[in-house]
Length: 162
Image (cartoon, rainbow, N blue to C red):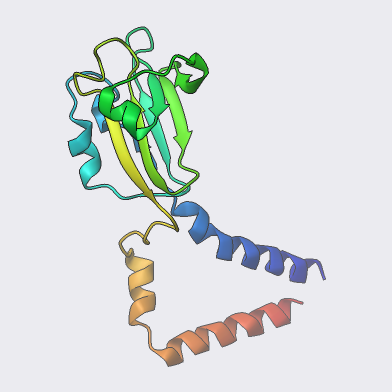
């Protein structure tokens, strides 16, 4: 009975793992981080962001910060007067929990106007699967007979163990 329970737990984890592992972590600006002189429009243009992904803003917290703002505040580089809307650690992680447009700016005077601003669109759903590795390529090339045979042998082995 203990082996049977272990197999059920393993199956549940195996089915959940692909969903969990598809979320991406993005370091804003890649190796440059969050600082002046980086074109964040170019950085974001070829990326697709999905619900569940995270943004990591890495910066010198003596020189910069991050504010999540509205589209209007983004366009006018208006920094919210409420400091609770800002992030100040220099290693700020933002979970993209909802689909839609997201806007971020540096709240230090003049930095947003100098290009320290990021606009992204977060898509609903999960990210597409990564490119296939050797194991998934082999599975794709397997015939239906080979897949059924493998499943049958796996079930037979599980029944013998029980």
